[in-house]
Image 1 (tube, rainbow, N blue to C red):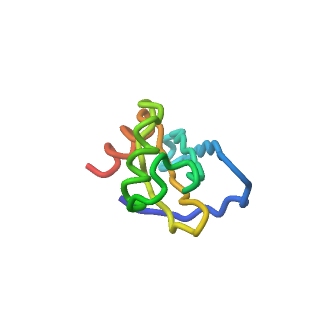
Image 2: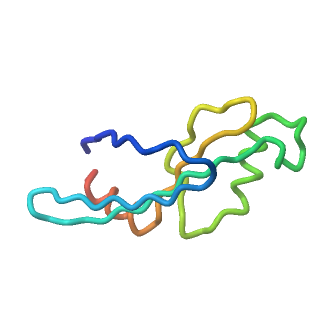
Length: 95
């Protein structure tokens, strides 16, 4: 599967992103969401950060799947989710 990078504006908080692509005349719509997970919201802030991420993700909407975990800062980690219906399209493209 090929990849392209699409710059998006840096906005605070949650970002809902819809991308419509046309490839060889076939239109597809993909849905992504970017959320910032703040370390201070971890129930056990002294735990390893990977454990904090796992704990915070355990409360997420099951209609979305983690797609990418970005570079963490001292305050938060950005996590990109893909809607499950879009994930199916991505899987088909990879086959």
